Image (cartoon, rainbow, N blue to C red; front, side, top):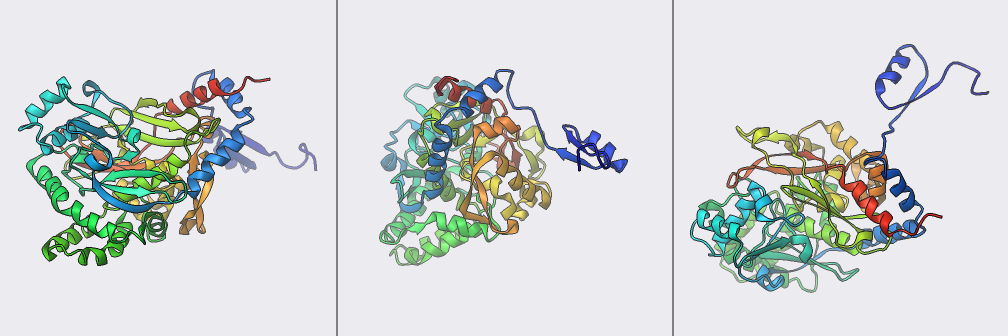
Length: 470
């Protein structure tokens, strides 16, 4: 049979209306989901140079291989002053670097709350004035200190930190303890109830967890194993962590009980962890941070090793370009709102928690958690399709993080900036939404994509580092 024999057959590219019209006339038609590459007219030259780089295939195989092989064990719980060497007046925050004058409402609110927590100001007004002047104060991205923080991600010296270690590559990563939902510091709230809760976490919860974790020194909690199991139980590791939280509590409860602490403190801690469905998020995040950090600094690799937002900017880092940030304006999530809040109340995207998507879970594993749509919006089919689409822009399937509804296929893992730029398919992130006014707290949860411009920007940087064509 030749192409000219038989009935007409059509391959349609672009808008679906052409294919729909032909199908209505019973003409066989194949719709191809093609999109022009992201970026300006120079992007094709940059892509050609990167794709012709003889290091690319091997570099990406090395980087994603390290990411997939990384482990994550909980080895300690310590104050940030001790674990990170964080001095009085020094803070960490989520996302790329940000100055006070460009900081969003929730970022400002969290820094104000941290000032109150540390006794550096007596009132929110005094804290804001000091932060605006910057005298004797400093703040840097969590990622610059092997740390990740959800939402505003603010870490101050007295906050206690989970300390995770990668037994395969030897890396270490940290994350603060999760406060719960609603009016909490990470969403920019700083009222008396927020500060009181943080003091209890520093005075009671942190020391209790430290005793329990250190008692398991010979058999540390395997956080990666819990993350793998939670995907089999309806969690996706970003906005749904219910099963992960309860499995973690089950692992630690015997040593909590045997810690010798007052039974009332143990009961209060167990009640707090068990009643906070997001408690495991702050363990899953540093587990993904360990995996992504293991993939860093491979010359020629186009693998994304960090996605992070500070409420103003969205930034990515790429294995082959070192610590350089590629940034663009953060988009505002679309989803479901709490109470009387609406779109006008939501701040643009914020937080280091997109490290979960960077590591292959979260929005990339939504198909494992169809119930997540009741929290972030959409339909069950949307969650499955979101995961399917992410295979188009990733380098591997993670054999540890398997998705039952997809026949236990490994989650799409290892975002490739060349694939994102060529296809125009942007990573899917499911996230909480913070109120844009400092002090508001959480206003909802939803879905968001990074700004498109940052991926061709990263490709251009890789092109500059690639050998000349020809």
